[in-house]
Length: 356
Image (tube, rainbow, N blue to C red; front, side, top):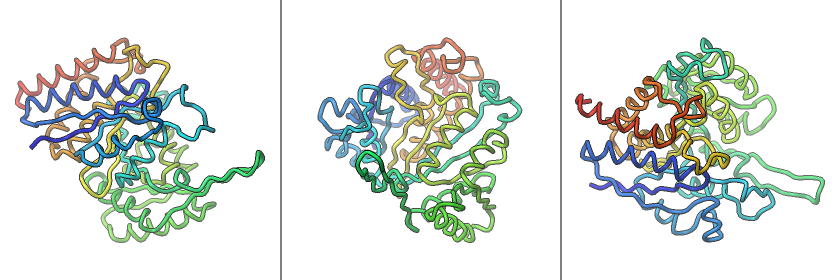
């Protein structure tokens, strides 16, 4: 059966890194009997320019019919106007909500040969392996903003018990397959929504006696990620806190360009994207790091396409590419996007030849 993947290259370097991931997907699929079809659609700034909407109806219709969605990035200086009624980021928020994608899963693993690429001392990051779960459909990003004249503005942060329960429950389920430790991050000493979050986390945690639960405040977590990153296993938190903490955690691995993510709901369909932005300063230069998007494609194979075996092959090929010394500019090297992609594909071929 052919699997239908909707491609949303978006803005900036998005089209470049999505093209790299598609090249890798085609290479591994062709060798292992997986039939894929690709349907490219508009989202973000380019969609605004073409249709006036950050998420055109045609894009949403295609996404709802897809097995999985691969996204590049949205936004850029051209559309950077907070006062605009239509902004690129609205497309991303809208598609997550329309598809019921409540959990953003962001793994952060430090490759042994890249411990020196982190701005932190290598001994602080070596061996770091964390999975972050960021809640996607609630919190301040989906609140009720109000502007009162020119002197006062308000945003609301709202969470319900079911929203918290489902993301925390997923965190515990993931932890059961890892080191059986969950850290729930909140601001319960100040925020009422965080106090509900902590209450529900405790209740869910009681159903998983084999998994240790730790509660931490978001500010202390931000500090501990820089000093004790290896103590974390699975970290679960609300929307805005997760957005900030995962960008910080990317520094552990050496670059935003390395970090993949999966946005998941109740079924198998998911939206996959690197966590970096559109990087307009390097767009079109062919120097963007494609590994975050390639690893996002591996997550797609595992979670949405039912081929965890092929996900492992891509991950192994990426690991070997890094071990063999290939580095894009963000990692202090000179490899182009195309060269890095070709290096991964070459190692896919080697792994196939060796029967992996």
